[in-house]
Image (cartoon, rainbow, N blue to C red):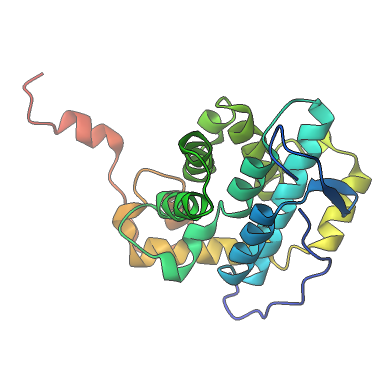
Length: 235
């Protein structure tokens, strides 16, 4: 993993769509029609200000993929919730948000606070929290509400290539061209390993532990089985 690589300028400019029931205002970015509202514009800037460039590009690509998949499926969805949740799904990797909880929950709490400060109601804030907290657990998130599922699908496509064949190659190439990956694989792994090294107890029951197992010398997490067999009950 290369921790010294320098960020490159971002190509393309952020764009932004309103929630269900609001007057439609949109613009096109990397071939994708996106919602354009003040809330989404604020989320884009919040993500930009609190993310390294490679990570900002990742969340932008994830949003573009999520919107592309939503439009392909022709489903009804809350565009603002998908935008905010996807744009802020990795905010917990920022060192400024370091805390005792697993990084997804730290990020979910920050994203919910952002949404609450913008005046979103409890349900929309909860959808945003769920998306961010569960974004690294697609085996659950993909089966939740439409917004959570779509956002997770976009994130999963960009992160691990899941659903890569769902979109035309030209669409994927245009999105990646607008927001280059900038050594995403190495840099993301490095960011997670930093958390494993500095807050190991927050990584034992989640995917961050896999990075510890692979890359961090001396890292060892307990087995969930040990909690069951070692419980104080006699049977």
